[in-house]
Length: 516
Image 1 (cartoon, rainbow, N blue to C red):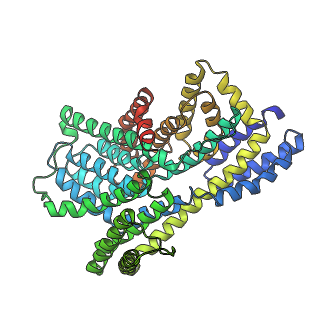
Image 2 (cartoon, helix red, strand yellow):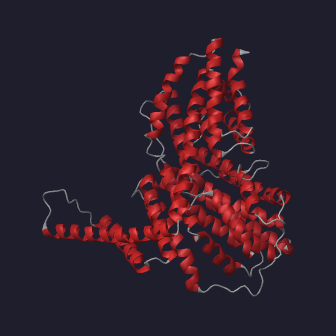
Image 3 (cartoon, rainbow, N blue to C red):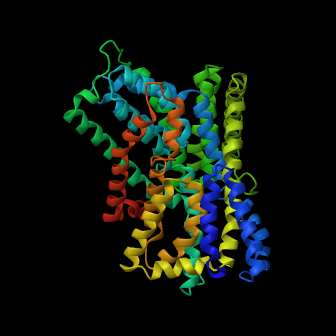
């Protein structure tokens, strides 16, 4: 029995998580229990847990993961300020007269929100409360409407910046380094979050295109499922469309452009995104709009000029022109700070900051608690011989490297029906990824395949999180059966997306290769 403790431990973890007890405590509790069981039976050296302190320190000093709370804050501020609602309303009126137009608007808004917030729950709930009733009033089939809203909300997991991609980048980088050590390479390469952000752009846009094509084709084949919106729905004016669309796009360009252009690290770009979201909130709330607008202009001018004409004020060999330019930069910084403070004051008056910070704290604590607990679990699992067993299983599968990858993809898909993407990312992937990389699979391509697979976990019954989010926000006439039936075609589209990236690896590898 003792030689199978690692398998029993994994089964016990699945059972503990499915009881509904808090995930991080379930993971840590199972790990501690099996550590003592392994020590008592002689199956594990308990001194291995001495490495736990080093793992905890490595986590809290990991600069990559610092980006997570900053990106979550950016998304929470945009959600609490109701900017998403304005965008949904405007896009719905813009495309509403087309057959399937409301569905198209929901997918496009989902893509924009994904690239500016990345928070699946907030996006699904917002669209479930705003777009779904409008679609039902227009005569949409409840199953079709539910499926579109659920699926568009999950785009936040594959379109950067996304919490999933940040966690995956850290996991895959560690797996890549471990694989290089196993291959006898001691001058190892690392992978960056920027590479995974760049790699996810092509597949993310391909998924959006697949969703839009499906909606258009279904609208032609079954027009009764997606009729045009009511004729009396007023079309937005051009200025109204620009006011709704330009700020999120500008924020996306600022954040992703800084990362992909090599101007800023993901953590620095996330802080820019947080400030940008705060300024957008201040403008929307109408507090001192001229002051905030002037602050935004000052910050944009400062960013452009500093990139073209950098000045190092600490140097002793500056001439008069450089000193004057440095003084001008200081004035621009002060003007930008005044605009930020004005936006912050307005956001605090409306309690937007309070709600956003509380949401950020809750989500960040949950993510990091899970990662810490997974560190304990993986140490015990390795101590019980689980890592060697996983490598042996993957190595002995028929089909070689391709067979092993197919097995892992199916296994992750099945786990996604029951577990959250965080648990799968920090518990399962560190065990299988090094072996797959050693077998010859490209780590970035591999990471994007897994990312799309994990995105699908939000849609797969019975425990897909998007399904629960929408169930809580949907009108009473939308049943759980409607939601489950509605997401089935989109799960098929997700699998088609995985097949596309599998068949054309360049879809994921070309852009990071060109940039980095």
